[in-house]
Each structure stands twice: as C-alpha cells, then as structure tokens.
Length: 218
Image (cartoon, one colour):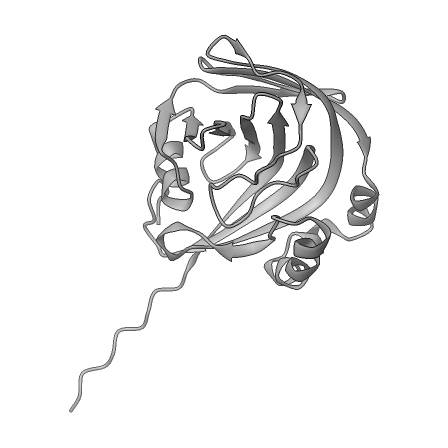
C-alpha cells in the first residue's frame, strides 16, 4: 500500500489597493511612491528611490513592511523610518527623514478615462492584467501589468485611473533634486517600471505566493 501524497498548499493571495506615483528628476533620481490605505499590512506608504548612480533604496515605515517589500523587489539599501503621504485633489506630498516630495497633479489622461469605463472588479482582476500586459508593453515601454517577483511570487497590476504629474518639488537629504523629468532610465526594483511620463496611477496590486511569505501571516 503506497502512502498518500501530500497535496501542495494553495497559494496565498494578497491585495493592495491604493496609488503609485512615478517621477523622475533633473538630478537623475527616480522616485516611486506607494500609498496603500487598504492592504494586508494595514494602511501605509512606502518609497522606492533609484539614485542617478543606480543605487536603489527602500524607505519603509516598519520592519514588517520592509520584510515583505524586500522579499518582492530588489534593493541595495533599506531604511526604516516614518513615511507620511498626503494625497489631495491637486497634489501628493511625501515626507520622510531622507526625502521630501510634493508632486503637483494635472488632468486625467485619456488612458485614465478609458480605464474608468472598465468596472474596477474587472480591471483589477489578474486575468484582465494578463490580457492587457502585451498592450501595456507597446503603449508604455518598460511597463508590465504582470510578472514574476521575488520568492517565486506572481504579481499583477490592475490600473483603474491615471493622472499626469505636472511639477514637483523634491529634496534628498537636503539636496534639491531639480525639476520634474521623465522616469528614464526605467527603474530596476522589479519586473516593471512606472510609465516614462510621470504619473499617479490608481491601482490594485495582487500578489500570489506561498503561505508564510516574508512579512505577512499565512
């Protein structure tokens, strides 16, 4: 009599609902801000910074956030410190000990209007993200809507709105980073960069991985 095989555990699904800001600066630093009012980690914001020399940093508010994000994305340095983000109709303001940034928001893009015609439950579904990935690659080079992340995790970005960023004020460790610039070269934290043209995207990020993944309960 043979022993019964142990079934593989079902993957765990984590969903983060919020906004992603992607901007470049004249100095060469590129910044990606995530604001997540609804997530398995509670409400939080985090910042990914790629300096002009390619050095990649994560600014995370707690060790748990840092553990999960570093298990999913790639960084050269992690700093755990308070991260506050205030999103209004006209701007996103971010404050950390290392970075202060105000991004001034413009109009909704034509893509944003198109996304608003799609029910949010459809636009954020992993199957829709998989279907839209080839289109995203052509329309916004460097952008992916699905891919493989750290620890074998699968990640899906379901955008539901996009607005222009029309100006910034940003300082890194007291140094003025200069005027708004494209996100160029693309950031190298994971399989996808933000759009080259600076934007604020409303998004549902879905991550599938094994139970007990770093930074989150099973």
